[in-house]
Image (tube, rainbow, N blue to C red; front, top):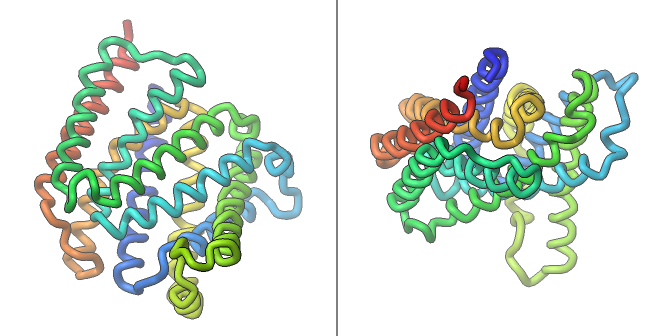
Length: 311
């Protein structure tokens, strides 16, 4: 693994950790409707990326490719599922749960690209599985906790999108192409949320699917929504998405997921800090969660060492 890739992975981990903690703090303090907050954050994130790419001479190739639309659609699922997961578990717990994407990605790259695992990686994989199982067992409701289902859905979508991004021509192109790609993907995700809302309202009038219209209206009317969406979207979501695509191009989908396995301890630290200011509830079982995260990370380190060690 190149030193520059390690530095990039560290920066992306920091950005996503700040975003996760910020999203949970915003939901907790303002009571925003989760989908509406996610929509506003994506609008600011996508718009910011396109502005940096250069609106006057914006590369339009990404919007013409089916893979761009597919990635955007998958990120709709990711955004909805991940945001809702934060309502049923702490940010630290959710961040540990998301490391399941490493295991899903390993399966994905084998099925799609036929990249197998080295035998020396197996102990690390087993450590990661064990750490995740222990964490889930300590959640309220255990395996039936809705956070588990939401995270599994979210991270499966993340992995499929990353597999598409790994070979996407614009992600393998220059900086402006990648900026345009990530900007379009983020805005397409926002548009996808709107389509889901409209379809649910028109076709499923008796079903409680999607956001409550009253909660949406109240959220949209709050000036704090747009202030927090700018910070979370333009300053965190946009750069984080760009960094994730760049890292995927350099290390592959499974390499990117493996790098993100270092995120849980930082999220837990940030959550402890903001909890001291009463911006989020104090995390339950903080030491136990840290122990589970340590097991998962130990497994990740083992896999990295086995994969990238020199013969």
